[in-house]
Image (tube, rainbow, N blue to C red; front, side):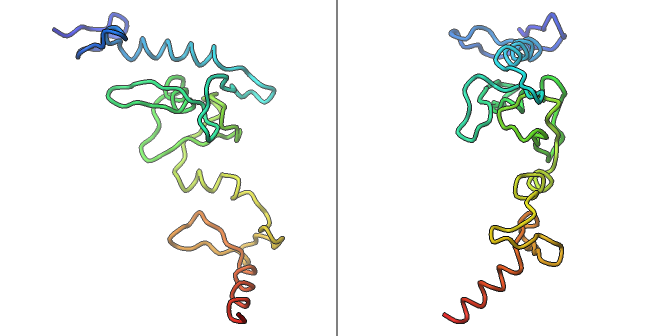
Length: 165
């Protein structure tokens, strides 16, 4: 016999884990998750909701929730799903504030992987590590890695050093 959620009318079924209790509908779990995000974060001067709970080694908020048969672990992804909605297929979330522990869903924007990589720290660099400017004439992007940038001047210098050795 399947149960129906009293709040949203969705069918709830399946086995339950005795330690965790009966299965709860996504709408009930999502409300608890919203409350947890708001309780376990604080708003800094830039409007970021900085996660106070555990963080992954990479700096992202470490939070876990099960949606359907899929476990979602990143706090900013969970926050976006709960407050804004679904992430478009083939997209990932970009932190517009560049703060990895921020779980403010309005600081997140869905982008393709290439757009997200270009918006990252390396894309905003104006000079290579040897001081040459990243101008259209001095920048090469390999066709197989369109998000990668290489300084043509440095490549010429490396080529000369290779030929002389």
